[in-house]
Each structure stands twice: as C-alpha cells, then as structure tokens.
Length: 117
Length: 255
Image (cartoon, rainbow over all chains, first blue to last red; front, side, top):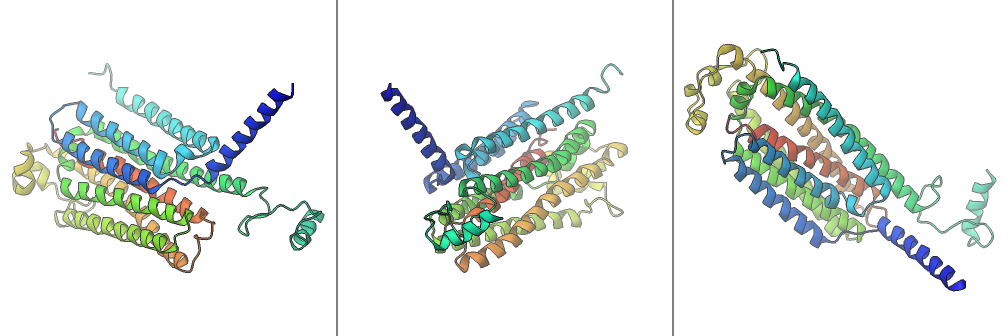
C-alpha cells in the first residue's frame, strides 16, 4: 500500500521539479546558433524560389517559408517551446484568432464578385 | 495588514515563526512566488504582442485585399522594390534577433560583458536596418513614388522610361486607371514598412536604455525579466519583417 503511494509522491515531486526547471530553462547558445543559421538558409531559399516561375505556387511557397521561419523564431528565440502551458495557450489562441479573422475577411472579399460576370 | 507586518519583521528574525519565505529582492510582494511573478509578466508581454499581431494583421489584410483587386498595379509597384536591399535587411534583422537571443542568455548566466556586447551589436544591427530602409525610401522619393501630390505614374504608364527596372522585368504599360492604383501599393508599402520601422526605432531607443542599465550591472544579478521581455518584443518585430519581405518584395516578381 505504501509503495504505490511513495511512487506517486515521487512522481509529483519530479513534476514539480520539471515545472521549476521550465521557469529557469536556459536555452544554450548552440540552439541559437543553429536556429539563426536555419533562418538565414530559409531566407536564401525564399529569395531563390522567387526567381523561379511557379505561377500560383510562388506566393504559396514564399508564405510557407515565412510561416516556418516565424514558427522557429517563436519556438526557440521566444522560448515558447520551453514555456508554461499558459504561454503556449496564449500564443496558440492569438494565432488562431488572427487566422480566423483574416480567413473570414478574405473569403468575403475574394468571393463578392462571383457570378457577376 | 498584519501579514505584511509579520513579513517585514520575519525577514529580520530569519523567518523562524513568521512563515515568510526566502525570496529574491526583486520579487514583488503581491506575488506568492518568483515563478508566479515571471509567469505573470511574460503572460502580460504576450498579451501585448497579441494586440500587435491584430494591429499589423489589419495592414496585412488590407494589403491582400487590394492586391487581389488591383493585381497588375501591385505587381508593377512591387517590381520597383530592390530585392538586394530587401534580402540584406532580412539577414541583418535575423542576425540582430540572434544577438538579442544571446543577450538574454548572457543575462540568464550573469555575464555582464557578454550582455553589454550582445545588446550593442543588436542596436548596431537595428541601426543598419534603418539605414538600409532609408536608402530604399530615398529611392522612392527621388522617383516620386511616395503617395501624395507629387506622385508620378510615369514608371507605370511608360515603363521604358525607367530603364533600371524595365531591363529586369520588361513590364507592359498599364492603362491610366490601373496605373493610378500603384499609389495604393506604395501607400500600403509605406504604411507597413513605416510602422515596422517605427517599432524598430522604439526598440533601438529601449536598447540604448538597456545598454546603459546593463553596464551599471543590472540584469546580471538574476532579475532578467526586462531583458527577456524586450527580447520578445525584438523577435516579434523580426517576425513582422519575415512576412513583410515576401509579401512586398517577392511574391509579385512574376506577374
């Protein structure tokens, strides 16, 4: 009876430690160097892709690369990967709200003239 | 009331009976723990950044709607931008985000010299960005591509008159009514990059203050909140540029 209880206690303590570590999580310079390099490579990639003639996929690829870059910045430079659930939820809610607003607005404007020509 | 009295005397009496916990001097007394204080401040900073996303989001939405409506004008307007300067500025800004992140690491690991150096490099790169931006703006002023009374349609109704751009893209002349909508492209260009540049200027001013305080030994005694939250602001401004760059410079190269 006491063994599982002990285990449970141990488990909680570990969790507490993890939470504590999250607050004081220090992202090492190695991560920043890798992330910075990835961002520069993706910048070169998006400029190179813009010289290709891809029709409708030019903006799609450019915005996809921009989204990847932004995600990397948010996760590592802005520490969201190592942040509390509250921060993760805040960022997620913000991005979701923004995407909803922009998608509904654009859906309206882009379809207003449908069937009128 | 009595709680705070106990806390004050407890601090003197080694907290034997006071129930007053040990805490760093920078913990405000309305917070239970330092973790709670850090959570609250970074939560507040993120809420501020969300309002900023909505603010820039309005500009991005306006840009996408007008680009959809006046597509040929937006393609022609976009061809006036210099990809080289745009790419250079993107690299400068990403590098400045890297030096800022290193600044946060130096503050966390209590490296005063490294912190001051990182902040100085970040400020320098921020100023380089603004310098390049001003080169681009002055090109637009010279060509009368700033919206207003002196706006000139010549590059768009008669592209061959603008050989530097014409040799690159061979744009066909736009009809006058479509050519006039290039003014909307440049209006949004200046609104978006100008608002971004204003954020950079504010950031540079705060960086100056941070360097001043960091030199005095602040931020390297464990209290890194200000540096961390400024880092969030700086990276956010970087993210705005990460989207401005493809939208304004890249996606309309092939019209």
